[in-house]
Length: 560
Image 1 (cartoon, rainbow, N blue to C red):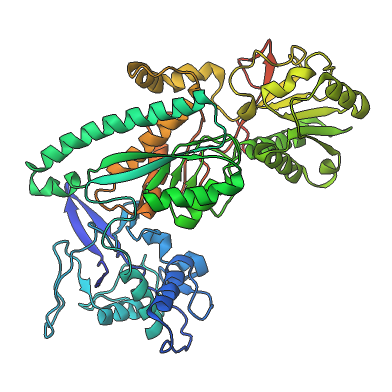
Image 2 (cartoon, rainbow, N blue to C red):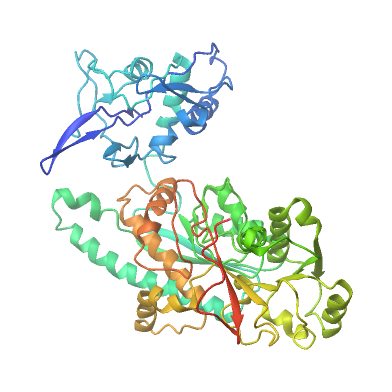
């Protein structure tokens, strides 16, 4: 499979000239003598992958380069992935375009005559590179015609074997789509993990099934149009596929979920997981997606894994872990004063409880963490006796309750004033605050990563219109809005992919789509930069008053 590298060309578009930066990082690394004679093709490919993705040479040495006349780049800064992306389908910024190296957007293959004096150009005006001319370009920074590349292209030095390894990796990109896509269909799954209540389960499926049905009706229309389309539109129309939804229900112990996920995947590989809901820890699903390189978009989970190295799992926020970090920052603010007395956090021994408690302790650290006392609930709902003994014996100056509303029943009759307040998690409490202890107003606070109550009507107006027009009852509006956001972002991303059905490219398009999404989730300030996996990065702290949040939070938007 030939490898294609783009020249720096200038195109006249609507009366303006746009410089197009060469597609391939023209790398000149430090030369490390090594023999590749004994390695297999697969090993060579893996060595090339490390150069491309990590900026690590086959010897284990650090990739070094210079750009724009001598500015040094090292390691990951110099890796090909920085501009060409993990998908090798290119990028653009500031009017500069890095063309793709694969897929239908890359140059079409051209046959190079054995005795040709100059390699031919394809229809895009870019040269098709052989292995020999690629080697020269990588070492010397010139195209097959001897012209220099743009100064934005880093200058590197690679040995012949290192060039061969990079060539092997780039040549290995599949010509066809990734798993889960065929000539007619694109398969998605949604995961329902654990003992999810019937209302939440049905709310999720109502949104996804309705959206898929309408999407497929549009696809049928586009398929008909393709038969009559002009040649310039043919590539756009041939990207349309029928969306197929698979429901993966995980039952039993979370320890058994990895095997269940693998079984579902063997029966039918899917291109991506969309939305989903969990009554337990999402970690097994996260691990599956990272291992199988399956994108997972915006599941409804209060306790997503906090994994800064995630590649394929994208979440609304860090959930209860984010709330814990926001609380720690709030408590450390000068306006709050010194932390005195015993701070206590009460949580259930489950995924959300443990993750929240660990995050708060880690965020406080030092002397403040030493004042933090943990109380763990392992059985049924705590009784009045439990709460009365706890409050009388420990006399906490601050109480953080990582609990659901049902766990607070016994607290209502015995709750007394707590000097620095009682804090609750909006993620765990939910939208219905009527069942909260009546003693909380005045000393009760919510860690609130969602849209404020007074802004909710405006924020969710478009989503509510869509739900009402489809007769979808808003029994769990938070889940409905988030699930609708997930599928519309997926649809927007796919619309811009043409028929380059690469999972990595899908993730890259999602990163671009989130900031410009027409529909909103219940999370404010949603955005994703390259490599970011948590779209909403802060929370409010709001005071409870008569069972409802006040119109004004006691803090601004806190980003820990």
